[in-house]
Length: 321
Image (cartoon, rainbow, N blue to C red):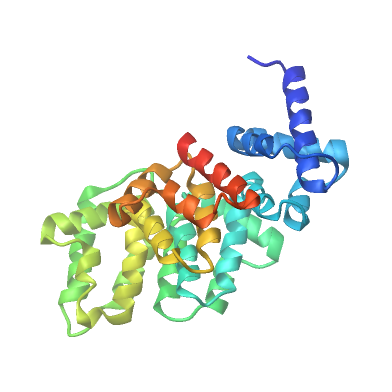
């Protein structure tokens, strides 16, 4: 086990490499940068940031976000070194500033895949940085059914969801069935209300019960014509709750070949490493016949040195998860 003195020396040495790599001063060992960024855990990266500030009197994350040196590598370093709740708050803010469907799905992925405690930390970070509440900004910047469902999910994240009640799940599954089948149009109000009163864990149990009782998954029942745009939007949210790896894989497939491919790929690999990136890789390969490593190599052509370093970084995270 390393002593505190040994650790301090290691972090100081890491900071020297980072300083040379991104401040513009001195020769850079780019492979060492990749090693530091991919082999250190979140707690170690936090200590490196603190050590950097003590050594150089500068915030490392600010340097990474403004440097003109190794810009693409600096971007992935910034995402990697940012504390997850602060990074997610920034991702949410960016998704609320755009009207594209891909950014809407990014907002969905944060709301629907983070734990209640993580969402609470994201709320606090968002308020501290932007001076407003996430719920208020969703209300102000989004319209329609999707806004109402997302607010319901955020509300449900405040519910203690440690215990799943399968009897209640069966009853709620029947409520969802009636909301779709009982009238000529879907009962949106009942569905949104129910989703706002149940934890994410309980919602998963409801969807399992629905399939057991009625055959198709609830999300497939929403494909009927009378469910309209509401059903289409709700299916995205339910897929993200039930099968997050499929949601992320679809995000990656949709981004292939367009201008956002690199940013989506960097975000997904970094935020889901050590969580479910292997499942995402499997879901992506099942639909495309290619592993994510191939997508990384294609999007970050190794013929370009800067791109090759980012590819090495992302592949190291993929292999290490």
